[in-house]
Amino acid sequence: MQRDTLVFDLIRQELERQRRGIELIASENFTSLQVMQAMGNVMTNKYAEGYPGRRYYGGCEIVDQTEQLAIDRLCQIFNVEYANVQPHSGAQANAALMLAILQPGDAILGLDLSMGGHLTHGSAVNFSGKLYKPHFYGVGKEDGLVDYDMLEAKAREVKPKLIICGASAYSRDWDYARIRRVADEVGAFVMADIAHPAGLIAKGLLNYPFDHCHFVTSTTHKTLRGPRGGVIMMKKDFENPFGLKDVKGNLRMMSNLIDMAVFPGTQGGPLEHVIAAKAIAFGEILTPEFQSYQEQVQKNAQAMAAAFTSRGYQIISGGTDNHLMLIDLRNKNISGKKAEQVLGHADITANKNMVPYDDKSAFVTSGVRFGVAAITTRGMVEKDMEFVVNAIDRSLMQADDAAALAGIKKEVNEFMSQFALYPEMG
Ligand SMILES: Cc1ncc(COP(=O)(O)O)c(C=O)c1O
Image 1: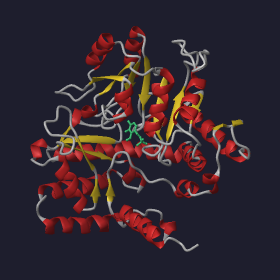
Image 2: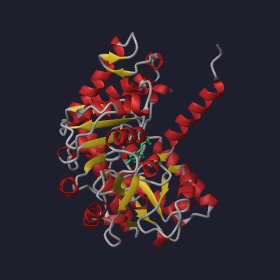
Image 3: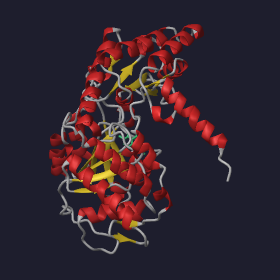
Image 4: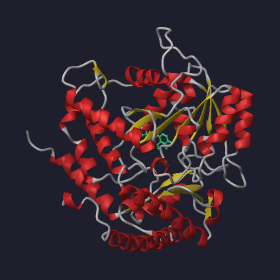
């Protein structure tokens, strides 16, 4: 069969785009070469419905070993007893977890999407908002911090079955112990969705959610720097505190209920090639190099936040504890939508984002979100944040000057040529 040059040419173009630009989308990263290579392997040919040692297909002896390795390594990283590595994505992990513990119509309580939450935490356009009855807490108008008083008051008022913490655009750490206290008071489960800060949590740079949250879900492709995918974890609470039953009416361990909610509940065959790549990424996370990487991520984020602040930009909550920051552009007279477009002209990739109490729609927005996980993987350190923020600032201040933007783009491309990306790919 002839090689499909049309598609391979596009893949090549995407590699060049990633190489020459500054990647600031907070949910993105660059995997190692071995993680990338593992995703294109023969395990994609294999059906393996079920779990290691208990599959519905023959020939699973080898994929059993990679999946078990991924599970064991993930448990070691986070010091937990249970992990399911099959969810195809973060959204799938959340869907499965909710299927395991909720009934349609049950109340759930999550951070409002417009305040930094995620679609799967109860948005009306998502399964979570359609199947369950969503309620929300927010952040303070003045300080931009999660309003725990509001969270507690809402929890007492609506008595949710599940309280969700975690976010897509929140730059501060979480008080998991406080959330668990109110959950115990109202009889709710707590789930932490650590999709964004998982890498920092893995290396002890942020609070540890597992002692307080019944369940923890994550993506594997953001700060964990693995292949695109999701996971579900649990440290304790195996005892099924609310006496949940399976479809046959049997009392089960929580771990069984979660496994069954992933498969057969929400997915068919697991992506064993991606699970192999997850196992490799988890092995990388266990190395000392990954500790230094995460420390650098945190330092870079703080250096970037300081550079923005010194130029008069308003960072929601005034700074960052993790890898990202959300900037309110209203005092700079440019919308998030326009900022995203303008930065694109300079080969700087970021995304528009609503800010808390935004007066613009989700399509326009007043904010922009920046994350440093990807540029830190490229090898940038604190001093490089000056160049990056300077390029962003000059682009936004000359938003309608095509020649100026073309000039900045040239500088950006030249700057990025010193940070190799997949040199082995030619
Ligand atoms: C907090 C949070 N949860 C879940 C997800 C969903 O992950 P995925 O895009 O892999 O479905 C995201 C993605 O950005 C996220 O930020």
